[in-house]
Length: 276
View 1 (cartoon, rainbow, N blue to C red):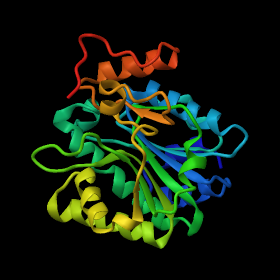
View 2: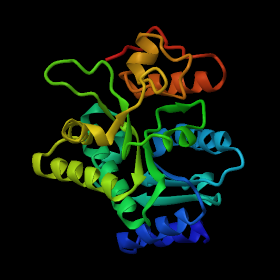
View 3: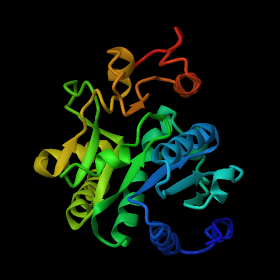
View 4: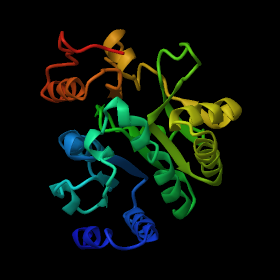
């Protein structure tokens, strides 16, 4: 498939065409289809994350589906075989503030339903899955090979600490893997329904589902898959397979931490950057 041509067509065709393209993408014999969501502000980090995903898999085939918000110029990675780019124009102005707290929940609320729709369209395969990752993630090892070894329908990163007021929230909605199975689809449908009916963020909806179906969802070991608090506040990241820098308050601080880490400087947080 010429993905550049397909990308141009996506602006005027029904969403089902995108679903068909994802099914075709998955025929690239990839074990996991990775879903990313980005815009102009986060394109450099998204590009670096894609490079890490591909390089750490080495000779294995890969499939990455990237949703691009707004009017950003098409990045070069959209031309690579194994990568599908879907553009979404946003006339409300939300796209210009990706990652900023005022519009944050509005925008990321579309992540789970998008991945669920793709999962529903893919052939069932117990040994394969789909994965969602935020762009503020640093990859250090081939996590696909590790996540597929879990017996659960869904493997999800822990939000830590989770025993905080006003309620317990232990799910991180920015890093999770779901099996291509009816069981995983049922769990994500339940979460999607809760988001719609109760107007909940995806993390809260996933938390409720995890509490109801604990045996079907595995929380990833927090020092191997640390969130920002575990990595930057507690310093638990030496053994990490990935690091999620989600606890920093500003986009600029997150980007600086990721860029310095990728240059080999370690996980360095500037003195003027604060954690939530």
